[in-house]
View: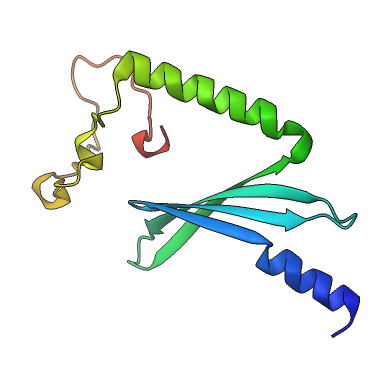
Length: 129
């Protein structure tokens, strides 16, 4: 294997990786190497979804974070998480995220006709919040 192939394999494999499994989401923290030989971080959120035909697929979102931004990113992450904990506590409020949540107890109802008394409705996917 030549140096270029080694470089491609290292970029594909990463230098250092950690995985956080969180329900239907998995977060991957991967250290990778630039062509110049410096390191950067990729954070990937992978969310398991089901298509209409019942097959599973994964939606992925990726953030590239370079060393010069690590400290600022960490500071803002610390500040925003502290804000959440100070204002809402550390307990998870959403029932869907409770360890004993049973999705079978809840039904999803589709409404084809407008509901009386509702002038406007915003379609919000609460899984993305």
